[in-house]
Length: 268
Image (cartoon, rainbow, N blue to C red; front, side, top):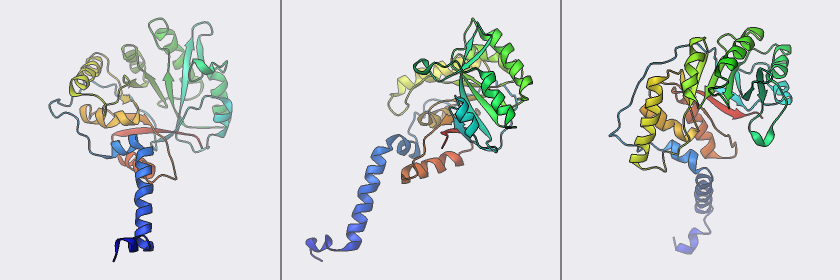
């Protein structure tokens, strides 16, 4: 067959189109593609294990809803929803939490108003509290508030307390909460071995001093966390693109990985 005849052949054109579309898909979802490829992280660094916070979390599936930070989102949750995440800031003037994601969207919505909807709908979901401002000044009072919420809304063994401030999490562990250390932001695929070693040293130092139940981080961090901290379940968040083959394969990969305890997805 002459070269010009290839371009008249429908099978060749179909294959070429598939390859082009696949290439575009890979480029548009580079982060997902990288996670699907076996990691090449350093073999000179040994996996580590430290004391755990061994509290129970009621959970039936790993697919949870991300960012239920307003009343409409709570009202739209499926009645059989297994779990969801919300973002909270403790306010010492009201001795309770406001619910919003960041300072660009400060809200007057209190956690009680949101959980009243939860209760009125007879939901039984477990809840991931992304505690944004846990610190020295509020850790005792916020613990008291969370214990009160647990009792008021029947949330025994249904609460995750997540924070980057790991030093304050042991108190929550001691009081029966499942805790997660939100690890420092880094992209392991963009760092050299010496930089990764520093990150491991930081995380390991913290875990040795302050036991937690799990580790949480961006989806592109999870292969790294899984490799060097294999005894910790990992909590993460991801996106779905049903028109992308890479995204479909990527999310199937996440769902099939036993190290991933929870994956947050935006509510449809």
